[in-house]
Length: 351
Ligand code: PEP
Ligand code: MN
Image (cartoon, rainbow, N blue to C red; front, side):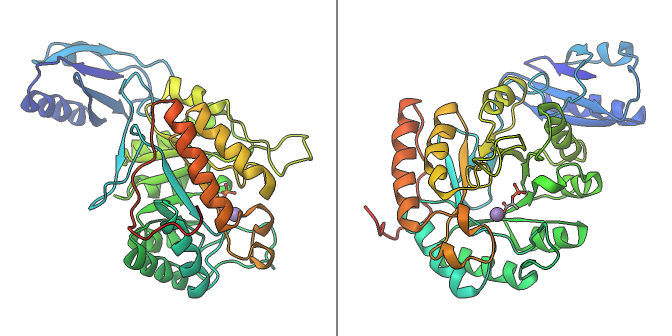
């Protein structure tokens, strides 16, 4: 159910309606919009008796949301959500696109600093990099853990880049939440419901990657888990799905971008690195992702990809990253978008 307040409803009236909903044993999610506030109601198994709410001052209408996902839906919030970060001009989901870049794994302080400098110099906004790595083999490099998070925090100090990194379980989420600006939930955990709920109780924005065999509805429902716990700062990410194609690691499903944008107010990024698994396909698909309307990219960059401890074959080199940034800028302009201004005043190394 959704309570749509009148455009002229006061904050007091919104609060009263929320109180009423809570007193009936449900959870109220007031979501302010450009025109009016909508209040999503969760926790109700079936339809809630609308009568009492409809009569309350400031209430425009009470509508049933027939889709299984509610808070992520444009029914609740018609305009795009913009995810902001404290003390930063970087925002995701606005007019300008955002670029997250960095190694698959944080391998050492030197490695992270070298790559972060290149990302910052060339106009990237976030350093990505795993401190906790979900690996197919238990014998593969599993990440540096908290040490990796500390290195990333140092990178933020040094270059002004925001930090996005993956939490693989509740324990690592506690630490990621402490050190990072944004919590990544990986493809393999898209339906780890207890982890999603924990992320929903966090105050930090969440980057939710699509599971490798997840439908659009499953992705929406995963995001709904996070919002239903009270964290509305969720960014979705398409990172490729499993198909029979064997020329790529995954098939990057760019058509999900406009599909998500029709249904949901949440921003969506594209990961052309995991989405293709091949270095030579990252730039073409990165360009295509911007053209299709993504709010930005998350891309793997390594200064020595042949010796990377994970995903070297899909990591682009810093000079390729510089090219990508310049191409992204040009393609975004066609769509009347730009690239969020750099976080660093360091000059580009490759022009
Ligand atoms: C990653 O970003 O390094 C990663 C493991 O991504 P995904 O969860 O999409 O496989
Ligand atoms: Mn990776």
